[in-house]
Image (cartoon, rainbow, N blue to C red; front, side, top):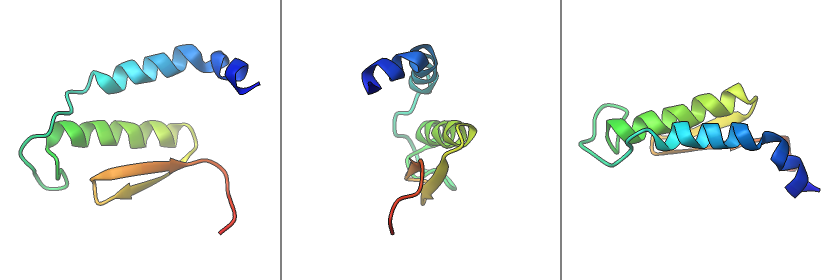
Length: 75
């Protein structure tokens, strides 16, 4: 089921992945709000923006990482 259903979004997935990996995100000199440098910060911001566009809840972890949540589970 899931394997077939995900194919509906295949072109969008590949397009998003191409956009994300096109960002040169190699670690460089840290800056304000950019603990790993400008490129990694740009990639992280891209991810957060895209996840919000998809209606997901995004949690940033001190500009070092982020995760997106879908749905509500037990707490």
